[in-house]
Image (cartoon, rainbow, N blue to C red; front, side):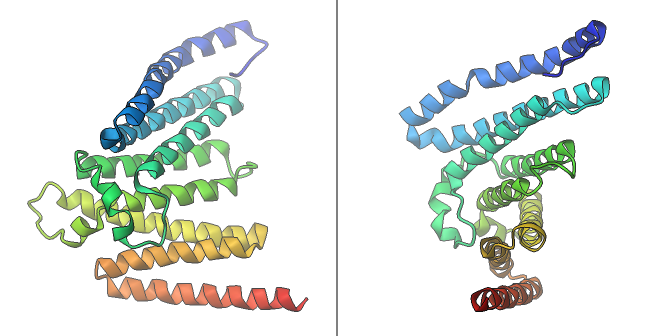
Length: 267
């Protein structure tokens, strides 16, 4: 919570953030009872965790609004509100990871059974949640700014966002999605497009962290793995030209990594 020497300004700030603090308390109130229900009834846990993840994103959004109010009134970021937003965004990702795993370049069959537990959740609801995941992450990064110490930490967060968003996509339905009259037609197309964008962006971000910051081979391997996951989706959806382009990019990065490893070994 931000503090100010001006009592009047602080009073105004408290009045403005009160509704959002109240919403956060309401959203948090049921978290523990929902988790208890998940433990007591594993058969319905996936659906409950899905909507609990959405609840966590709503909390993160309210924390971002509180930061925005503080920024407008005091002209400074509210680090506490931002920290809470980051915490609840991470919780949303973890709840979704618990449903569909954090497997990246894996065949759909590896997590198909887990995804099937979300059958009661409409395809459009899954797409809307994935949109919200991406938007909240973008707003969080903007709120922290370019010079934040969390700059490279966000790469891992974006990576997990891309991974769970991919695993929430029913690839079998996307592959057979050829009926424009179906209510699932557009959500599946948009979900697949968004996931491909996320995977490509995450690959580029890990490559940037490797090139500009860490020089760790592990970051480069992760970048290549995101491309491999993207290539798998293009191949599954019969997007041959796109798959070939991604394959060339993977080969180029793999060659760069091997050259770098040889140089390091010769030192």
